[in-house]
View 1: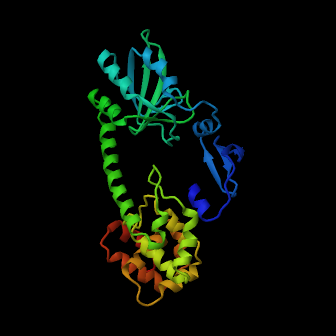
View 2 (view 1 turned 180 degrees about the horizontal axis):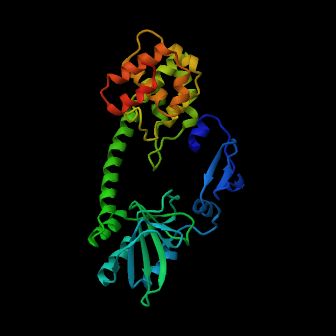
View 3 (view 1 turned 135 degrees about the horizontal axis):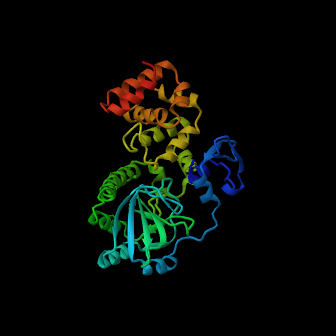
Length: 333
């Protein structure tokens, strides 16, 4: 659960991961127990990252390496530590192309998190003697990873790097980058639509930060209670808003997690009583379907009476969205 959602629901902050209990299972993976008692399996690469005390990325620390580059070997499948995982695709030693590569490898100072994959492309930077200076993993045209840094480094101009790769004949990263850009535009439009459809009582609490994330989550319950003293009216307002998320019962962009969290904090019996009220609008049923068929669907559906499951299923099946119709099969026919 995201940190801001924990704060919204009044849950206690978790201690740093370095303080979580650890053990090793028979497969060699590390078992880490979270403060809430749940557990996760961590492979050696992730454990190494968690325990790393390496500095954060800076252009100044990278510059001496870039200055010495006389050739670069391009590999597919990314990098794990200093190990190139894929096959070598080509070698580049043209001075003009190396200058363009240096320019495309400009980074923002400070960490950009840690991507959970090994990257799309591996670059082995070599000096004039052919010795490896550094092995760099390229992640989705957005960031690069070097074992000398703890976190990944955000590229100043990721498009220039995937364009450089495409000029060398490695075109897949550019295609994936462009697809991601198109999907981001769709996601942004969905987000803006979601903000516009918020209950009026929350409109002043939906200022956004530089990442486009709303602030003031902690104030939402109070504002909703003030605007809708009756819990049923609050639920209806949230259901109507939840209907205007990303438009799918299956996929979530993540920005509507607070609404899902607020609905999850309401007793199932209360939700059922609200949904059995006369005069419900289609958006109330859509919001309810998104809630019950989205996250933790099996647990949520289990507490619904058969008649309500049938009603929600009929509503979803009338939408014509094949993925949603398939999802609705979790409900009683």
